[in-house]
Image 1: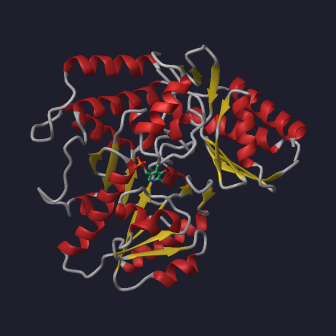
Image 2 (image 1 turned 180 degrees about the vertical axis):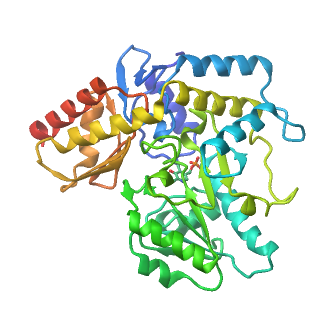
Length: 398
Ligand SMILES: *Cc1c(COP(=O)(O)O)cnc(C)c1O
């Protein structure tokens, strides 16, 4: 790198909008698998995977090769023309899921915007006066005005009023609270099967089954925000597969491009056809480069049985965490490699900082939850290393 860490921090503070507050004081120059390297050659173990993005870890050889090849051919043409990779990536996603059609956006928020627009357009076409969306408290759906409105956390909404009308919030795993919000105008129920950003809160099977039943009875669409849970994170390709229900619309983003920005909206045919030409669009979405990344990710998932590894390593990880001494441990929850450790004391930030001193990167939510999202290529030895360090920190330092 051309600059020192302090020079980079100073430049950032002067020129970059301060939306992240105090970041962790480190800069990385290279990556390899689960490892990240500083310019001084220090090694960090990445148990955050760029917020559930780097499913294949850093600089996976075949992935890098596929991106290089595409870069030398073509990056962008717009969707004014047919795009081979766009069509092929859509085909792959449709074939591996319960959906019939796909649309590519550039981020999770943008995919969710598309899903909300699609749900409203579906009823608009039918001349049915349904437009309200029910989401869950503590959900996270993005930071555009409408997806921030859908997000069931006041702190993300309050400064941006007036918000998009027509949103209501129900409680996770409380079907009566969902029923109480339903009106003749309810168009969709939107949820994360496992809430990520707010600390790994898992929807129960009964809750999801009841919601599907209500949606069928009341002519309401079920939108699954799988931006974080999708692409193998929970040990299945998509989290809805844990529940034996099929949503009407599903959104993806984070891991889909392996680090290249891409989001997707998937829907059943009867819903997808609600969009007519001109109703929705994007300049960048589904361009040859981003869809090459998605195709490479999906190919490598198949070749290297990544989803299977996520399931197996997730079980191993959670089991090991549960076998730690119970000091400070409130609850350990998760599916696959989407794991939260809830402490019964406000030590999450301090534990995260101690892990950082031990060259391990994790996340912390609120004062008491550690958020663990390793690359899906993770191996047992790396999990052993993590649990060993965490155990040492909790038993010796607090
Ligand atoms: C990260 C996330 C989003 C927002 O994705 P962006 O790419 O940051 O816009 C939406 N929903 C869920 C569940 C997420 O985890």
